[in-house]
Length: 271
Length: 317
Image (cartoon, rainbow over all chains, first blue to last red; front, side, top):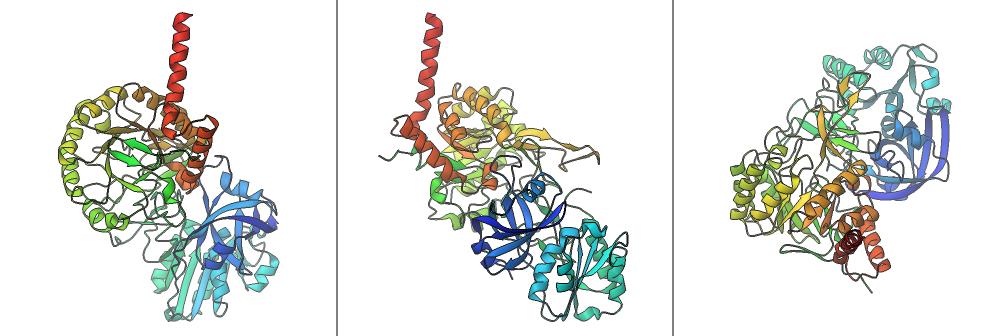
């Protein structure tokens, strides 16, 4: 599914839906990037014309709307995302994209199970749009107030929600809910896709191994260039890659890796 | 009338005085789709070592709150043999000159690499990296030692007739002396500064922000310090000086030219704005027009003249 054409585009925010005080869904008019994006890819955004922050920040593409707009899910974690969240409809956004490899689901799999945590829902929703049939999507959040989706989206995507405090849907985390489903699934024809906190994905990797379940991860790392130049976003692999390296680059070789590829004992953000 | 942007670094003739810094433009092809390559007089490819290197543990990069960048990649690269076989041929007939950056663990390794490279006609000049702060052997330990610098410039000089640029570290106490050693042993130019040594700690987890603890510090905050070191070296040697360190816009670049740099390199800012060289080139030519100059190479004289004038005033006063 790899797409190699990269564009730099000054997009414009055409829609913004605030889900809560720290999270919003933003639509950016960005025709070139929208036309060439595939699920699992991301954009690298220059947040400010000043040097605060200096480096661009990567954001997964959540959807492509009417061919010309990309949908992004923004939650304020640090400086970059907080500033981006303050932008309003009509504001410009300096984008580089689409970047990364995108999801790849072998055709022998008939069902896709998505397990997402928090804003990790974004790249999985994009994939679900391409595979609306036989897609089970489990989304975990701490509380109902932190859900990164609207009520409308919960219905539209038939999201199976788990909240850690039981304030909405299943009482427990996304993994607890996934374990409820796994019993009913034919592991040979099911493909697992996941994106969320590293700890959650690490846990899922172990479970998948126990159940002999195939799947892929959308990884995350601090990025400098996002085009494979700076090599700052290294992800540690289980088995060395083609160059006999124990590292792969999240931006270019990823952000999608198979469950078996990544050594999840090593968190790229530091253990 | 158009401004003449050409510049000469020894025998190396460039169409513009803007160069992409090593490590910030990969192997030369990664940015080709989104960059106007013609804005660059040359690009320095990622530093190559005798053997492939996988690089340092993660995390490798961190942005400091003041808009600086810490990195400790550890010279991850494909190694000289793969570089010559696969990477260099891709740059044949490129619209910009290619400068190859090399680093070795020992002095003889530098010599061996130059020997191997000399068989290829794709590259126009060599940049000897003796200033990487993130490797255990070689790197900065060479660039802070006059004897080592002398020996390795000498050995590289013996192996090629093409221009040699030596990339210096701002961490050297006697930087002028190191630069002079480069000049005396046949280097055609020096380039500076490589990154400063920096560090950051996560005060909550009590862990370093970068796995190797210390790292190379670059970006806008280092510009005044880099400019001072360029000025220092310009006044110590007669060979061309290529200035770099935190250059983000035309104004920054012009300051380096005024301080006496023959050309400038752009590093970290390429990650932020891949096409920054084009903007900087526009700004420089616009400034030249304002100052009634016909070429960018006249910029250095502008500041030096003022200096001489001020000195004369001070003496006479």
